[in-house]
Image (cartoon, rainbow, N blue to C red; front, side, top):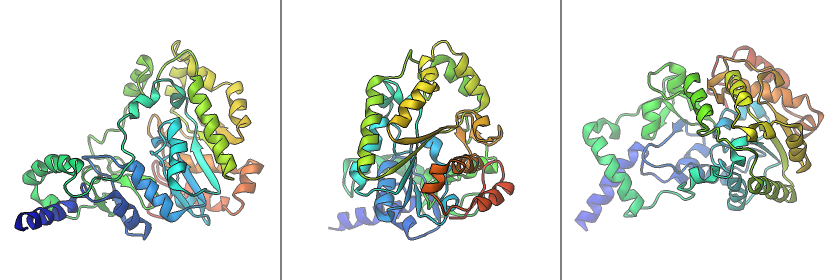
Amino acid sequence: MPYALLSIGATTVLEATGELISVDIVARMQAIGLPFIYQSKLSDHTYRLKLTAVAARQPQILVLGPSRMLQWRSAMFRPYSFYNAGQVADTQRDFRRFFDDVGYSPTVLLFSLEFFTLHPTWDEIFRNRSYADRGGLGSAEQATILRKLWPLVREDPALLFRWRREPIHGLRAFGLRAVETGAGTRLDGSFHYGGIIAGWPGMGADSIEEVLARVRVGAAPFPAADRLDINQMQELERFARAARERGIRLLAITPPYSPEVVEALDRSPRHGNWRQFQSDTTADWIRAQGILYFNYTRLSSFDGRKEEFVDPFHPSEPASVRMLLAMLRDPTTRRWLPDIDENDLRRHLASATRYEAYRNQY
């Protein structure tokens, strides 16, 4: 019993790092409005974190897609309830899985359509993704995390006691990755790039040269193929059909890349899949699935700005505002979201920085 109590006590103390605590608890703390950002370092349970958050909140507007969708903010969609579940649907199969798991249907689903998810080998990248919460006390996963965590705590015991904060708005940084980068998931599910905004060195924002090198060799997220994969296309059709049957309005976009990336993909002799995805035929096929679709790959399609990127394939928050304003010019989008105040969007855009339009507003 003494050893068991000591073990429980030590684990409880180590949970202060954010690396061992259940992500269900993290999601519920954010749902009640506790002001912090969260990103762990030693394991990744983003799917379960956001699944729990969405099930608890059941927002009218839900965002899904890969990390390129993480800059959509709840304040943009006021007065509607909103949550950004970006980075849980990195593959086509993840969309159906998420809705099977979450057990509710939003009024409007805003999601991304990406050429790379329609590649035959794309799913293999995520074969080891966790869809569950962290294991409990004594589990194999917790033991693995403890083995990784203990040397870090020995080197810097203050990890257990220092309430570190991200550098822009002073929010508590919870989880070692949030502590190191000043970045993490906000209350509304969107992602805050604290360290990058503050100009901290070594924050991992990819340079244009690095990204263009990925295009040349066909590395993720730019896998090369002659054409789009029919099996992945059929998976998208199954998801759209299932969502329509649940009464969900499907609003899809393809977010922008920087102009240099678009030009490189356009010129690439290896990326026939990119050219097929960008064709009118593919846009017509997408819309035939009952999806209201906007292709914002090129900045000119939504009055985008070259400087409004976190890196060459992650548009920033002001770019998302511009895309929303462009979508609202479409009568169907306006009918689906009649209460969004376009003047308020424009006011925040007028005072936006390169990275932020709403800052710490929700």
